[in-house]
Length: 197
Image (cartoon, rainbow, N blue to C red):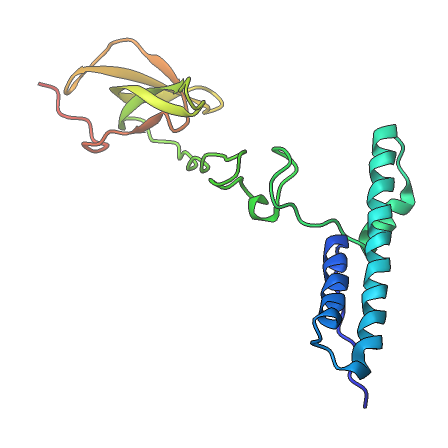
């Protein structure tokens, strides 16, 4: 029984590289004389497919530039897929490694996602900070932490009503507001408020 011929490469550059490899094997004498016509035929077939992929790519570029869309191009792209990006083309044209999030070695690197904030109960001792954008690298950081305790929420529970702590166990008689996000965190000394002096 004959062995099935393995499936070849998919993308245009892979097809071209496969054609060049077969021709190099013939030129470098790595193929027996009897097999040289077979290798040459396979190289020719791969080269023709690579040329078709290049024509599809050029047609795609021209139709995008002219603002037209050819429905046949989608069918061609299913048969001859685009080569995977080695670098991200933009924040939205991502290479496979950056599918979920741009990695640190990418020029569009994103900070790791911030942990989801869990709504804290009323009476919790907290530190409330301000978000500030760093002018140098554009990253956000928390500054100016202020101790306090949560005294309530707004109706949609998207903001905390809180009282600032002016000395341990003593709190302001007026309320301040802070968004219910990671700028409000449990006090490092624990969530219990110290006893009033």
